[in-house]
Length: 396
Image (cartoon, rainbow, N blue to C red; front, side, top):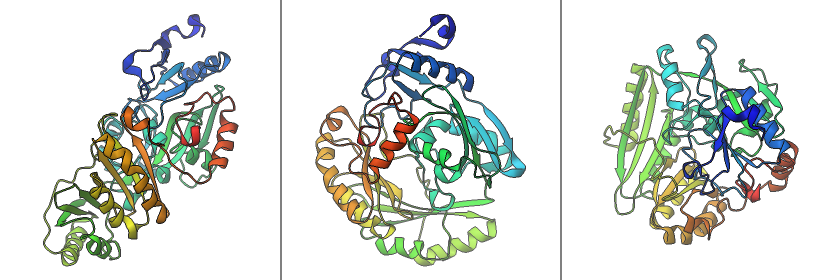
């Protein structure tokens, strides 16, 4: 890499720059899309393998890269570029923390409808991992909210897709392809999202049940009712009561009326400060699984995970649960069981994060449908396999 051109952008890697335990030889710290393009062109010329980082809040997720010459750190690209409040649209650089973006939107009474479930998550990290929180029941996921991206390809060419107008579908597929790709297809440098108004009123109503299975009827009654919950969240720990929480948002009058209806369905409820964070996230120190399933099977899957010793928290209203344990031997033994159970209901069990002794004995991603298609897409975007090599499904 020619130091005369990129010296201000590149420094040696250190242990604090490690990605799932792999220390990069070099770290680039670009401040713009043009900088990223220059860095990627030089990396391509020298055949360097590249991994992208925002704040590093999820650097331990996924499979360790098979090679890592250059870490592209986007934390300097942290600006909100444009907020069109009248059109409910915002554009921001990829290194912008989600919390900072929400703070910038607040004076207009608007928000990006994604919960900050991993502290310090950036916009780029949201897109790369497609992580969402309880409000996905009403507002959808990152994939539903992103309407445009600027991407630097592995060869340094800048590509743009989508735009600031929600109904503009040009480049629609590229925006969606980037979501959940773990940085294997391109470097997202900017993104545009559609927004939602901050509701006039918001309240959580919580009821306790003996277990996830015992809460099954309560969950079904809320999900199939007309109360239109913004979230239906379960929180279950081995040896303790299960908390079922329903979030209502809207006008003061509407929330009050629907609260009464929820109390009719669930019985006596309490207000409870429901945690939005994933259970037990600890930067590679604990095993963290994402379990997906049909809504009707969510209580069964949650119960199985609790019986296997996991702390379970997630959106039973859409069939997406997160399970965590700090016991490596327990986690290694349980992954197969949970994959069998989720597979029966059309879902999956993915190991998002884990200590080394778990990574060494389990397949982090597990069986995935459409792997051949994913490999073809990877080859089209990154034919030399230099972007986050080996981090994704099937060694992509």
